[in-house]
Length: 228
Ligand SMILES: [Mg+2]
Ligand SMILES: [Zn+2]
Image 1 (cartoon, rainbow, N blue to C red):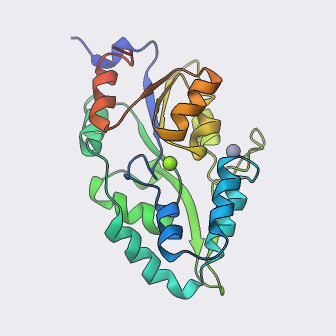
Image 2: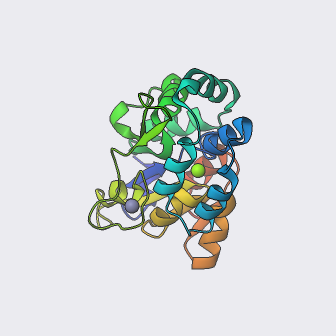
């Protein structure tokens, strides 16, 4: 019996970013743009230029918003976020070929879980940051921060998740678009990239395939991750 994934040198495993990858745009940036608390733009610039860690920057941006805005912020995201084409089909592909699929998100629980709820992904396959609305301002919590092998200040450390799948045993594939994916992209066998992540992969010479929809990714996965 022929098996699609036998075209990979080792069993593939997928690590997929959430903001700007599963969703059409970055929800954290969208919230900041919409509610526009003074100071958020310079924090984003510092994160993108890597002069501030993601953990510092994301924590600082949400701390600009009062906890009393919880419902407003949540419903803004749930009503405005769109899901990229082909996402359910990619999940179907993974199920069919028994390829593990993990959401590795630098986003926050209060919007990641509700937006993913329709897709039936097991909760232990979703990694993201947490939130605490009990104080004056919104506080982000970090249940999956960097371990001893990463000093990047990731917030949600994608490299820690990826390293649980040894490179000798798995063909590790990262799907992403931006700064939260940079550290993980350096570890994996193949990157499906958009936006800033494509630029970063080019700059560092990392094996990557630019994509627009998840249908593009399925097409390449059917070819064993080859570029044609
Ligand atoms: Mg992203
Ligand atoms: Zn890290």
